[in-house]
Length: 226
Ligand SMILES: [Zn+2]
Image (cartoon, rainbow, N blue to C red):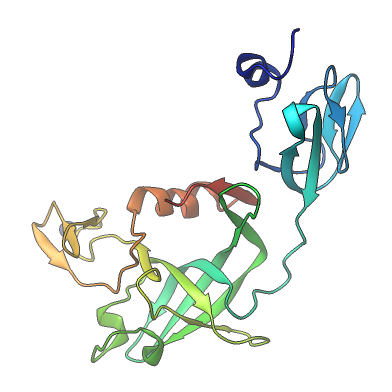
């Protein structure tokens, strides 16, 4: 084994990238040529994470350490959350929130942390940022939504989608169930028709449906949000 500062070697022995999320017990890499910093320990010549957090490498990859992530008990005002629409009526939609989004200061990544348990949230028609006669015309059951928490200490949470970033990020056609694609609004290629939603500028069916369906059982993941 040569210098760990070479990329190829780093890939071989340190598959975890700067900014990866680790949980206690995760194998970070071989303990040769790199020091085990805070939040890690050495077991059988391997560096193992002892903390739930974000992985960082020191200068020239001589050191590896884990910055702890605090357990999130309850989303707070201004936190961004991702959830599924459970019901949608004329003035209120009910959402089950699964993830909270945090920005990692050191790497340029957005971290989706699964909430300890999913929280219910209410979205009122006054928090849409657009006018509509009924909330159910622009938010539908099964939609995946990116929203902002607007009040501290309320349950259900109170959320808003009143800017371009916020709104529906993944949706299916309400008549055939096919994924809707973004094309001057949302469009079903099977039915050849438009569907109305209050969409987010980040709308991406694959990305967000994968997040919800595949990663929901996991505790967290890291994604790039361009
Ligand atoms: Zn359709």
